[in-house]
Image 1: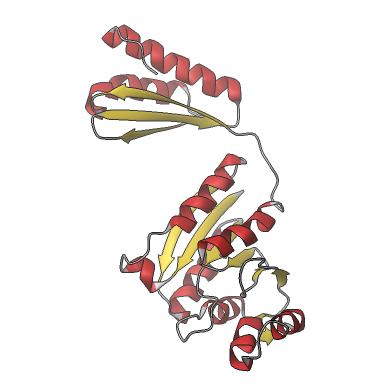
Image 2: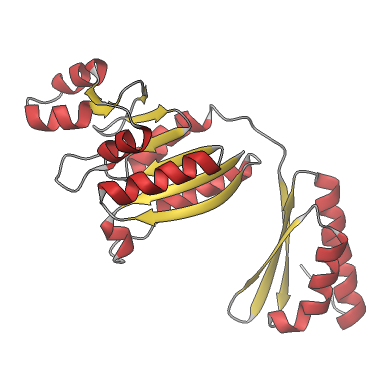
Length: 234
């Protein structure tokens, strides 16, 4: 499946908060063989969130959204999802009763309980705001611990596909391995190959659905490097 991750929050756009949620979600999905096509960050604005959700839900298989489910004025994700899907924003009675047992703050409870009509509630075991699934969209809290708790339940709904990866580390710079890298990319179009420069070395990552093809691509790359440089690579 092809996924889009949408992270909501002004704090992400202004650099106050690092977007660890998106990388966590992406890694978990890739590990079970799925593909991330976009990671999008949007401000706490109904129209901007709704526009991105509407576009992503039509172009890709599934959309995962984090952030903006709290009780303050800038927590507007639920309203935006309802707008994008043209659904009513209604108080979910099960959520309302659950939160009413925990607090007597009526205004906050009503806001946290108001989710798009027809949503499947995903209970949040470490916080107040529930996650939910509606159509091909899952919406989760932005607090990392709460996101991880609800996402673990959502992740179980997706098929686990074959996925394998390996990597090779080369001292030096990308310019020194271009010929070998381009050759193996051409020979193995079915293997995803990424080159990631670090300080003083390069990591080349190989991944795909076929373990044997990934293994052969790694071995071919090492062979090309040995022939060109006479060295052994990790």
